[in-house]
Length: 111
Image (tube, rainbow, N blue to C red; front, side, top):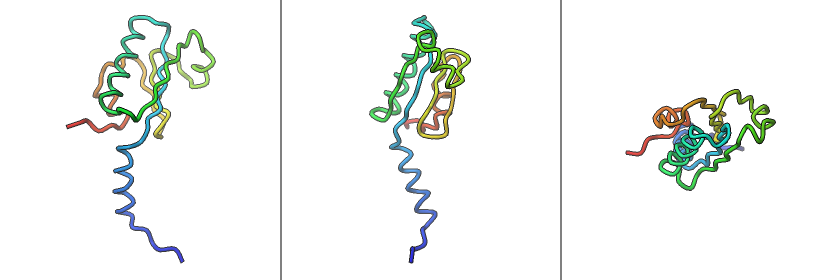
């Protein structure tokens, strides 16, 4: 017979695990323009500061790989796609607003 689970314990464990989840991000850019370089730098800096050792970033140039952009329904660049952890999220446009990106990625700010 299966023992009943304690929902409060499950919730606490989920909160703890959330702080150790690996993030899989895809950044879609349009060539190596100044705006693309700015976006790449902003995302990498954010990840190093808040997700050190727990992230993977793939930068995709939509000019070189339009099929990947089409498959993800990327209609503008830069676009950051959070693949994991679920739910999938997309951020379009300037990626330098750290607070907006952190909130959207559901990352807790460091104290």
